[in-house]
Length: 382
View 1: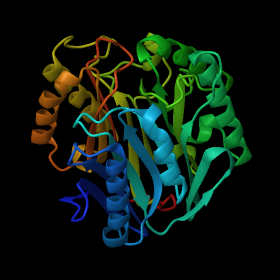
View 2: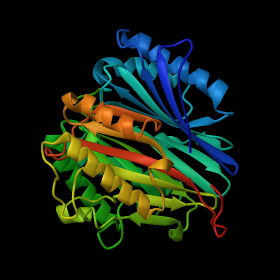
View 3: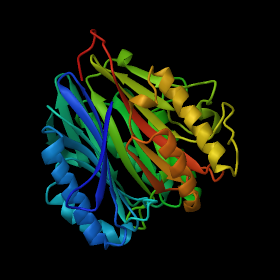
View 4: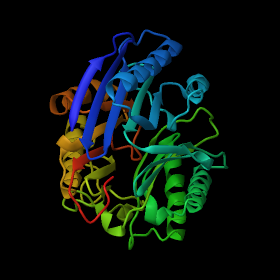
């Protein structure tokens, strides 16, 4: 993994880029963040988009965007202008969520890009990325307006099941990763868990089979009637043996032991590389207990230990991590956590946002994705 950081010459935007090049497809993960927080939202949005376009044209060797996520400070007042700007040139799956950047800016952006792939916009919000034997399907900002978070989650997942079926896929066999952004997570997460458990059981996703790597975290949509929104990622063309679920049992317990249904992490092995998706991970032990309540530094260290154990189970390390997203319950902890990350991970593209975790005792949670060179001649290259 190679890393590059710089400030755009024409716009007040810092860019942090990770790049992985091996075989025919190169991959890039980028975090863009505003450096002048005194600007208006419209000025910050224009700067982010201009800096991104300039980066793609000059730095990324013809890469195409496959996924963008925008982190907003006030979705109700900011989403319309963002969607108008993005949809003028919609070229990928787009996720928009109110999770205020903790550096004081109004907008930040994470993006994933790849070279030498074919892309296509499909119905139902799916965006297909194809190379050789594999088709990758990204979904961003899927919502509905059912009565409560439980029914919204059921409808989101059932609709996704139908979209996958239209492409010859299923939730159990093809979905690799989901994200659930939950308005007022302390109140509505219980409904998300109930809805997800019910749909998963109907799709043969149980403690005896497997679940799906996931993050369930606070996040708000512009419409207050939307209690839950979902992003997702699926792959068509994989053999069962190419997918490895990660457990790290010395550090973490199975999620079903406390009533939820997601995998701690998932590793996907291709002929030339492996992708490792680490779910939202907090300061928890292998009994399902919150560790170091009230101590942000010790929670951060324990969280890192848990993530490291999951990465090691996939034969990876933090050196292979392409990007990180860090969620804090209390904005006042930002300075402390930022300093800890700057010391240990100065080069990895990382965004810190305000987003309470699903248990009040957890002060911090993180997710990440790793990419590592591999040699598996029995399978097709990525």
